[in-house]
Image 1 (spheres, rainbow, N blue to C red):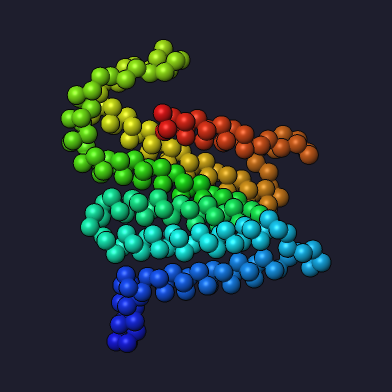
Image 2 (image 1 turned 120 degrees about the horizontal axis):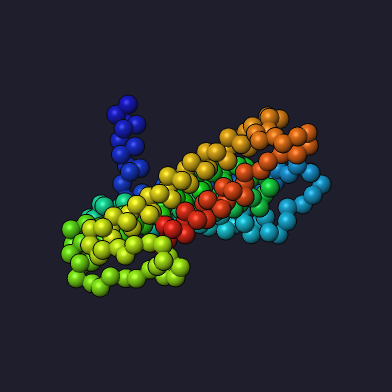
Length: 231
C-alpha cells in the first residue's frame, strides 16, 4: 500500500509529466489504431482522410498534455491557470469528436458532450478575462471611467442604453451564462429525442410516416443564444 501511494505521488509530480503524457498517448494511440483498423466492411481499406484524422488526433494529445503540465509546473496563479487549463482541454475534446465523425462512429452522446463542454469553456473565458483584469472591483472602476458604448442597429431601437459599470459587467456575465444554461437544456432535449427515435417512439408524430423535427428549432435557439453571448 505504501509503495502504491508513493508511486501515485510520483505520477503527480511535474518531473514525470512527459512520461505520463507519453503513456496516455500510447494508450490512446492503440485505441485509435484498433478502431481505425476495425471496419464495418472488412474489404474496404482505411481512407486517407481517416489516417490523417487519426494522426492529427494523436498529435493533439501530447501538445495539450505538455501544455497543461507546464502550467502545473508553474502553478502560481491558480484562478487564471485553472481557466486556461479548462480552455486548453477543448482541443482534444474537439479532436476526438471530429475523429469519431470521420470514422463514422459519431453519436449524439459524443456531440452532446462536446457541445456542453464548449458552452462551459465560453463561460470560463469570461472568468479568465475577469481574473486577468483584477476582479469585479477594478473592472467596474475601469468601466465607469469610459464612455457608454451605443448598441448596433437594430438593437439600438429595442435595447436600453447600458450604464457603464457594474450593470454593464453583470449584463456581460449573464449573457455568457445564459448560453451555458440554454446549451445544456437543448443538448439534453436533443439526446432525449434521439433516444426516443432510436427506440421507435417519435415525439411530435403528426401522422403515419410524418414526424415533427425539433432540430431546426433547437439549432435556431442555440444560434441566437450564442450570438447574444458573443455580443
